[in-house]
Image 1 (cartoon, rainbow, N blue to C red):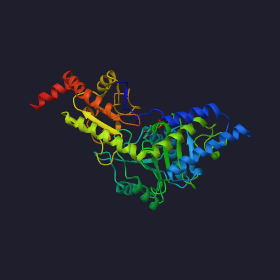
Image 2: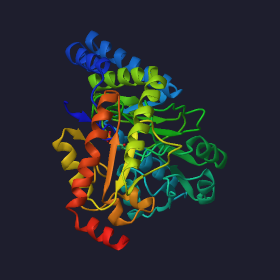
Image 3: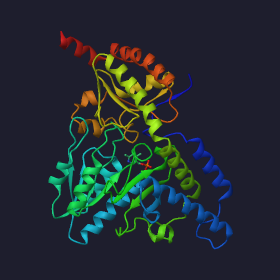
Length: 392
Ligand SMILES: *Cc1c(COP(=O)(O)O)cnc(C)c1O
């Protein structure tokens, strides 16, 4: 068996259509879209077309789509921008959850140092919040609500449409980090009353280093990056034309095939979940009802997530423990702590995230290898030994 890549929440392999579109643009669409000659016009036209593709999929207008360097930049821009916009009107309160991506949480923390106050809505044991919690948190001072559509670690899908309706009703700006959602589950900025939405190319089989911030018309978000007049004067820097074209192609491909693909992924996901739960002292993290089709996140008591990852890697299985951004640190994931897991259990976590290139055969392979690996690691684990003694 070749490498079994089940780390699609960290990043994905380029889809074939995206690869073709990206390479073709690198070869042929090399003009600067701001240039006043034929090759420049050709690049500007390709950019316009890509913008239209993204706008159509979001159900927005092409003038509401801004290309960025990725999801992190989009999150930073939306949150900082909305905070500064609010401050002008004396509104310095921000609302988010305690299990967002660090691009959101660290931006919030930076704004706290600048004098903003932030309410971190606690998620429940399934990684869910209710729209009521958001409603209760909003005050006259609230400038922004920023709540992710789907969580990158445990895959829970939040009630964004209800949250959007409440924000609209209260006249508060609503941003959602939809990096794990766009291209995977249906998103509609009008139906969901979304003012700003972040997305990233490499999470839906597009290129890395390119993303989108959707900004609803009429929101005069201050610029994050100053310079030239690109992106209608609001995000400077020569556009990454090949990556943008590749991202639009990937998004269109993902959207066109979403329904069929999600049926395929959720079947594989459920087989993995079932197989893991057959093993003793395991649990699945996150909601079983409102969950991304490709997300499996499990805890194996008595073992370390890092040891499990190394053993899996040894047999060619690529998974993750916590999020890619925090691996390398010994702290357990803030998401698993947010859903109330004790430190020692949160340490033994494994995320397997499925995507476009995974097959049923690969699921069989993982289900064949995983129980033996877990058993062997437990046999060597002093924590496990203590646990078993305590049981008797
Ligand atoms: C990956 C990810 C990001 C960051 O996106 P980049 O394009 O890697 O900067 C932000 N939010 C979530 C939920 C993510 O999964």
